[in-house]
Image (cartoon, rainbow, N blue to C red; front, top):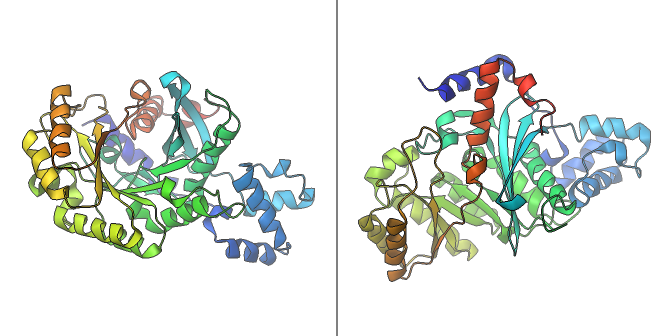
Length: 387
């Protein structure tokens, strides 16, 4: 038996299931004011908290000098309890890629990745601890699902990334966090309500949110059609990304097991309706896996499926995990795959591969940290104070 499933069982022990404290970011702006009034605090204090969190990226009430000292402890306890703590950061690409490992209040580990490019700075965030979709080539999927994250825990990852950018903690000096992608650990559509509250926190104008445009937000799914349908009705024009990975149902049933519930035709029809309603082109995520899904005939089939759709293909050279039989395609096969799609007039790009030398595959850093903790039988010794 491999080590990761054994470790998952340890972290799924009921005694470790502690309710996540409610947080300011879990509530709507109206609920934030109501909560303040409920506590006997003037409603305008909720707006001050929002300014600190979403404009200054400051989650330490002790430094909020515009709020009376006697109120800060109350706000720290009821509005901004500490939800995530940095375990360690790994740096790659000359410092332009930073992968952060976070410990949640109950000891669960999740990851986010901050990437600086010439024209944008993007954070890839987690929406669940682990993932229940069980895709065999994904480190997170093989670890299984521990639990959903709250909107507060999801938003905290974005605030931390925005703070890193504003403080100039990456090469190139201070910058603005411009893009957020829900492509870290977890299936966003399986944690729909918390993800949508987080999307509103990110897109609402400051100070009620971070003021990042909806078009700069990407929400991914392996194909939960009911989630895509709900997103279509939201009226928030985020970019929808569908992790397809193969154009034929026979292979997809094993690569993406949720395909046994919703077949490719249903997934693409739902994505088409999203594009029609929002006017937004959707993205087809396709991890190229050597000798599994990178054959020319599959590229031909994918091209025929997408040639009349408002879709863009994002090819992803697989970032292999240690001990896995899955690995990236040969360059010649990748080039041929691209050529065939372009022949159908389908827009296609190959994702810039980042973080290969820092356990870059989603879920890999957390799996390694858990394995280390399991070996030492002390998660506290492994994580506390580490950077």
